Length: 245
Image (cartoon, helix red, strand yellow):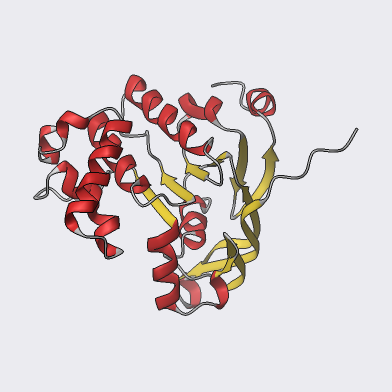
């Protein structure tokens, strides 16, 4: 019987260091940190506040420079690329979902979702058509012409998910996507993200403190004091290690 081929790696960080401040106030946030995420999985990154999770997410997304180490994302060596090239890479290959939604209040829902396509130079008519198709997929097509302040928190997060997916990025990174939501809406959001991760050549990375959603993870990286100290490789391992959720 032939062995199953290993799942291709989407993200690999090797011996990454990051510090903030100078002199006596310098704080080392990441300490020779190794991290990987695979195609076709929903990986959760968990750990106490201040352990470096958001810094790690920002570095692999190319929005923050590491002091040392290698950052390879979707085959691109971000640590050797110029800032302009990293910006173009990010706009073409990454989708972002944030805790506070970050929707533009003066734009309609469809206009908010269209933004990544407009940045890529797609025409407004084609971008809006694609945006409306994404709003259909996340279950709120009737909200396309409304302003964000007319939507509930759960609906706003669905808009943010549609915006993150509209340009079909292979990597979606999420920073606390459910912490501002009640349990019902948080679970609905995670169902959407899990379905995204099941699509071919897609990877979803979720930074979270929310134990209500741990069971959605394919793997979980536990972080403490600037390092990944263990990786749990199945829902069963995650359940055994985090008995309180």
